[in-house]
Length: 114
Image (tube, rainbow, N blue to C red; front, side, top):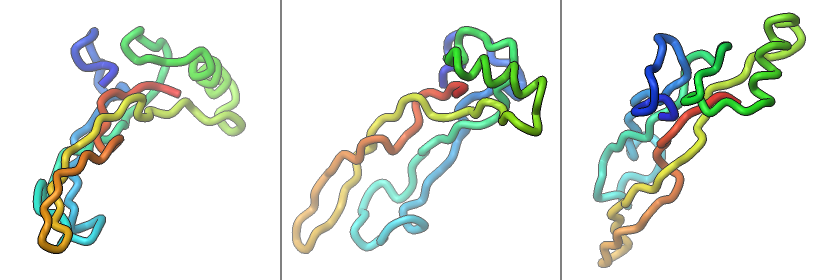
């Protein structure tokens, strides 16, 4: 995540969490040979001030955080969201053919506050 490997993440701070996707749950399983499951990751936890540099917070997120503290019923807090993704390779069967195909943007690499 934006917080992994760069600085120390505080408990409850926005970061990447494991989230194991299972192809049987999301698309037609008869086409997918490998992998049957993969770690897609997800972003979660709080985006609260002060934002450490490794949180990749935008100026807008900082402003929204300040406004949310003053008027929480009017302004939502910034959200912990994916900032970068990577592809996974999937082995599929199409008739008699087996194809290894990259699927872009399937795995969260970094998270930050927006």
